[in-house]
Amino acid sequence: MKTYKPLLLLAACVATVISGTACSETAQPDSLEQEVTETRLFELRTYTTHDGKLADLHQRFENHTLALFEKHGMINIGYWIPEDPGLKDNTLIYIVSHENMEAAEKSWDAFIADPEWQTAYEESRRDGPIVKNIEMVFMNRTPYSKI
Image 1 (tube, one colour):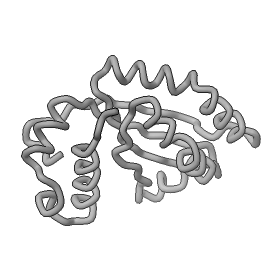
Image 2 (cartoon, rainbow, N blue to C red):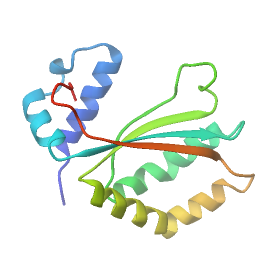
Image 3 (cartoon, one colour):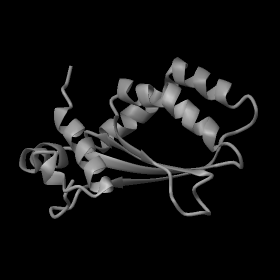
């Protein structure tokens, strides 16, 4: 089983940067940058929900999705709600990490085929669909990035 200590440090670094604390105060940037950024592919996803369904999406992520992502090789980096008035009631933004594009495709295929996910997905949609739109961007870190 792999240890994701560098990714845990990355998550801590992201949290400290967001909170206004310098990343170097929490993580070890040299080893973190070398090990994580040279080998990881990051995926930024933005989910837009149908009206009144953001709470249902949060519940599905908290109770099912995050653990299933990890089960299928994805690393949860962070989850955010926009502050913008037009987005804060219907948008979830998150970043997960993969070893590479091939691993990302394999993880997503396994996740979607997982019977536990299929059950959680269907049960969460009993009162109608939750997600209206999904946007995704795969990203590689620049050499000057702090994470």
